[in-house]
Length: 156
Image 1: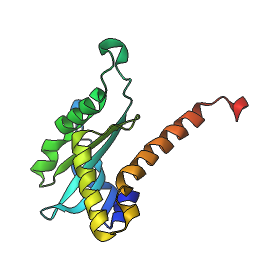
Image 2 (image 1 turned 90 degrees about the vertical axis):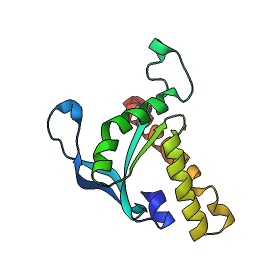
Image 3 (image 1 turned 180 degrees about the vertical axis):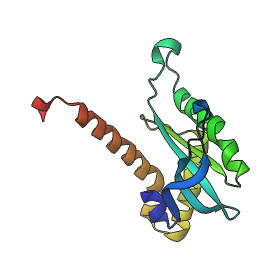
């Protein structure tokens, strides 16, 4: 949200769209969009679904393949929510990343477009890498917060 706000892109966090459900639950579980970006594509609001995964998930079963978990997470999100969004005239953007900083292809496309908006709105040299550096910092900050919570009290 901070990146979008600084880019001058209108969006709402946890926006109640009233059509996203979890098909595995077998009942209507209306969920908000993680981020609803207003007028993103041909004047239509885009539903952005954020998901972070560990690249080491499933490491024991399949071995380690760089970027594999983020691609799998993106695919699962598309399978779960894309049709509901499109049926309701909203583009769907799965923004999947892993804790090592890898981004899924749709996330790269979305963030590259945000970066172009930043560059056109603020044509300063320091604005060129703003989106990706800010995202990298946010991922690192989130990971640090998770590590601190798990530290024994004696170390604090």
